[in-house]
Length: 306
Ligand code: FO1
Image 1 (cartoon, rainbow, N blue to C red):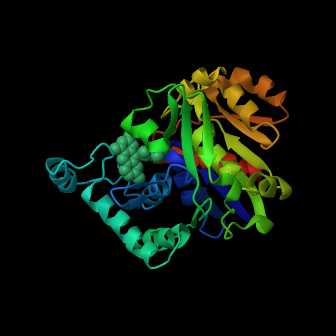
Image 2: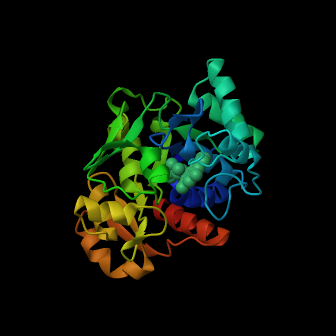
């Protein structure tokens, strides 16, 4: 029986590492958001896939959560001098990953196969499954028109007002065929941004239905603690969408799909409201600063499942 963990971004990757430390490769599989992917400098960049890969390989930059630790930036410095685009920071070692992926894709491999080879080279043994090998692109809808995700998130530093989101290609995208729907013990929705990291995964054609049809418990961990996101623009997006930036609102977002919801200790008083949404509620420390925090939260989630 397999635990399926849905993740995207830096926050989700933290719990993913905890789950990988706790469960052997056969017992947990990671499904990653690819809506953040984009073509840039002639490369196919898949940020959430790479963030999870580096995190599970324990070579991720601990300060940013994305990219690699001990990185060098000669490529960016030289590209800058040539007048190239440097708003999206690509370190020298990270660049090797993107160039390797591009070569493998040119040989006909898809995102899943290239990710498997790259992850294996970094010593990662847990399966990292892009949500789909078909293209899905998140666009952030703003009063001035739609923005490609990385333009919103990195180039414009999340400043534009988000009034909605689109996941171009999701309706035609097929869930990754390697996802073991038929032998799922549980699904864990990691503490990622519900709107731009989890929703794109659920928007892949047939994904939400397939997850619900397994009858397996679905445990979501709140990315909002005490009315703020630990990382990234989740709370800002909620305010701009006109919903309260609260853990209860995140629970409401997952109502109908999640059967269990984990809130942080500072939000313990929200438990009755979350319960009223039809989910069992667990209060735990969800803020992960140390590796032990990551493992402890993973333990809480697995104990909840089992
Ligand atoms: N995020 C930034 O805020 N600035 C960057 O320059 C940046 C570069 C980058 C390079 C590779 C990669 O895998 C991720 C990178 N990210 C950067 C993070 C990325 O934009 C986000 O992690 C996801 O798209 C959303 O979680």
